[in-house]
Length: 280
Image (cartoon, rainbow, N blue to C red; front, side, top):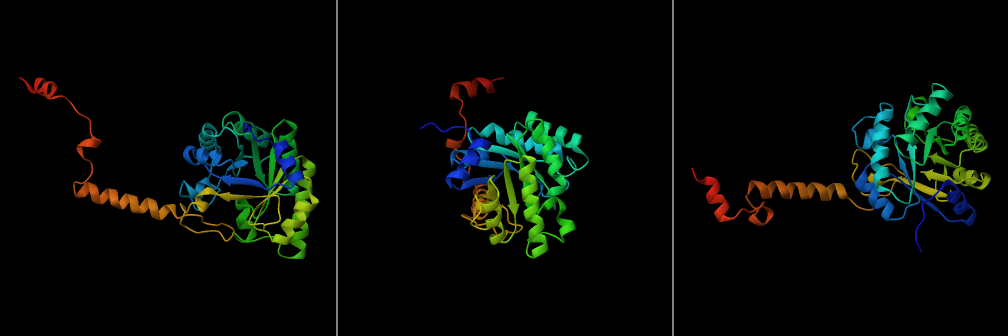
């Protein structure tokens, strides 16, 4: 059976059927190509690219131009997965017109299928404004890295009655605003379960437990290619960083010892042509 391009509507149908949604975060052509071949449902081109690939200390410095650059790379690789682009800090907080303009750029220039923005009830009108111009929106609540400083750092959210109630209200507000999916990051698993049960739209978790409608994890955590830290909610399926380091060290040693390259790794010229080239 031929695989079809994933759509927001199909993701909602998967929730109705009780099928788990599988989403990954990545930022480049070769990784996106493999994710698409693995038949994941969705790919988020996250502003975490600032930390994972660009060496920044957080997501705040990431620009629209950088997001568009990475979205384009991912879109060149993907045929089937639904690709969502993060709206970076400063691209939507300054007003609905700016938010619409930024979302349009990610779709028009970056080529993505949908956009994701952080924030709860306060940003529900912004999400609705983007939806109203025809761009699918994913909401992001819980730990929102762009505002981590206001939260006291990268910490789990919703661990007491007041903050849990606020997150539930945020989730419902984003659904009512027209978001087709919700990303919930670093919240207690029982709260994630309640959200998934209350909302008609899919609730995908980043450290929100096993009872939400699907999971999102960074590919660089999956393959062990980001070594600054490993989030509690991530599972490392391999240690590619160690394998790459081993390969680089072997390459270095072979070059220094004259083992690589050999003639079979080189190009040739006939004796006659070489002699003719060397004649006076």
